[in-house]
Amino acid sequence: MSRPPLLQIIPLAALTGVGMLATDLYLPALPHLAHDLGSDVPAVQATISSFMIALALSQLLWGALADKLGMRNTLLAGVALLAITGVACALAADVDALIVYRTVQGIGAGAATVVVPVLLRRRFSDADAMRAISWVSIAESVIPAIAPVIGTGILLVSGWRSNFWLVAILALALLPFILKLVPGKQVLHDADETVSYVVLLRNRVYLRDAAVYGLTFGALVTFVASAPHLIEQWSGRGPGTFALMQVCGVSSFIIAASRAGAMAHRCGTFKLMNAGAIVQLISVAGLITLGVLDERHVAPLIVCWMLFCAGLGLRGPSTVTRALSVPKSLTSLASGFLMFLALTLSGVGTQIAGFLLHRGLLPVALLVAAMILASMVLQKDEPAQS
Image (cartoon, rainbow, N blue to C red; front, top):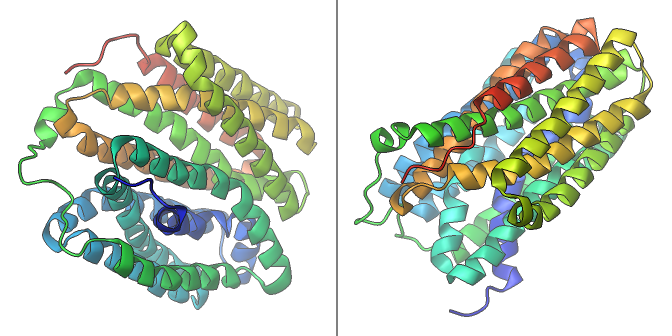
């Protein structure tokens, strides 16, 4: 097969990116959104948790639909849903309506996360598919850093509703690329593939590693979703500080993740997972200390966050690699269930944090610490079951 041209890869990577933008763009606006819609913090947090849980459930929905409708029609339906709900969110009159629209938007965002990785593996040779998927990974790493910066600028210029208008416009712009680049009749699973949730869910080692990753990812999202309120209401800083925190955190994640492969080769996957867990434990201990001392300067908060993200950069890729060490016929299913669990725990953690934010940093830090400690308890050096 020919080397995959960027003009084909970038639009496909953008399909997953737009779904991420649907949340990351408006995170800096969360405190303002509560004021504008006359709502409270838990209700505003529900606009994130409802999206996450819907996105999680959609991982199971879109896989089945893609086998019936084909990958092109599945992507068209999901991206069209993103565009329609982007307009609906921009016009939402109250927080209850926004929660409903965000729930449907989460379902729409799930289509690309399910279909695009499989599409890239089918479209290109193994080596080229790895290169193509790396572009998707780059988008997934960079968007959480740049989206809050863009979202802060949009918030200051034209308000939080413009973030959703932008999502709608970008989603509409991608529809022609789906028609051009995605085969019309190709389904998600080959006819000779035998996939079974029963077989997968009997794999005790897989379930443990999936839970470890889900808890660490959920802890990350829980704190990110809480940070805009903490930074503005607890430390008295503006949305620009949250954007700075995200840039620093994502940068430390990318640096750590880029070294994780070489480090795993030298010291082993499990030792690297333990090292990442210890770094995360140190970071949450720092957050708890800041909360106990009621230390409201943002510099130590950002340092703790950079440590947390670096720990995830060391730990996350290794955990995912172990979790996906299942029979080849189960790999796609295992990947989908892994994301389902991670997104579900993210949504639950985010909503619980919404009821704690009025008490400041300490209870949120304790919640994140509990998730990290639980992941460390589950983390064991046990070979994958095949």
